[in-house]
Length: 247
Ligand code: BTN
Image 1 (cartoon, helix red, strand yellow):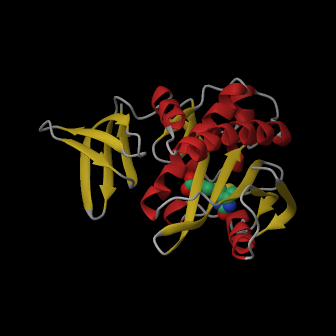
Image 2 (cartoon, protein in one colour):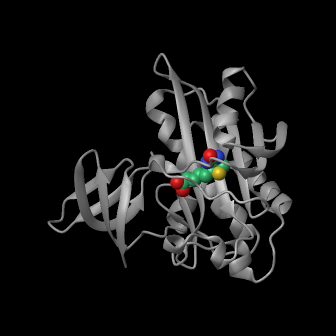
Image 3 (cartoon, helix red, strand yellow):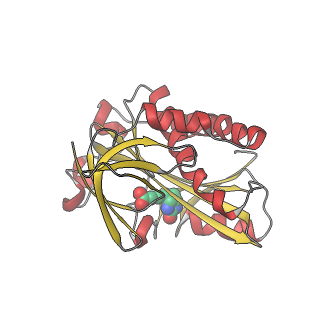
């Protein structure tokens, strides 16, 4: 990442912007930053709070030479990169499978990976990363105030966007190189497991119409989460909406 960097002041969504660049054949590694977003997008059709100067809003174009089924490994890779970037900066960041980063039990960052396929191959992927840098509690809507945090709220002084971005790109490149050179993401999975927020917690996950409740175990090499149900059955959940976490 970072071979070509585009810095915007204002955009609807860096993910949508990067999608357009990808369609216009911009190369792998192109990164888009914006100071704010007017229509920041989250997963499951949610919006992402994107106030000016408060957060890091970034999207990157990737062109991994893999099959459609392998697209899901980009999310644990990105989560591991964010987690390590924040850990390098002294934060006790944890990966909450599949795509959130938590500090002190609260969400500090989210990842939105959008993959475009062609003939069962990945044509390109856009990885969007939002990190709460300088929000204060009252910057968050009431319903998010207990669940969200920012680097500033954790450390007591403002975070520098540039510093966080540099660490993020450095860690991402290291983990992505491994994927391209070796075809696996063992280091990313190791990080996701070492700093797993869900491990040992009882979770309820809605997946393709059915709901699974059980003990969260490890994250597997393909990025799926292993869950042990009450009756002892082990389920590997590929991805889904996490509804509830009980420790
Ligand atoms: C989530 O937690 O639901 C994912 C949030 C992803 C937000 C980032 S901010 C940069 C990029 N542009 C977007 O519109 N969304 C992602």
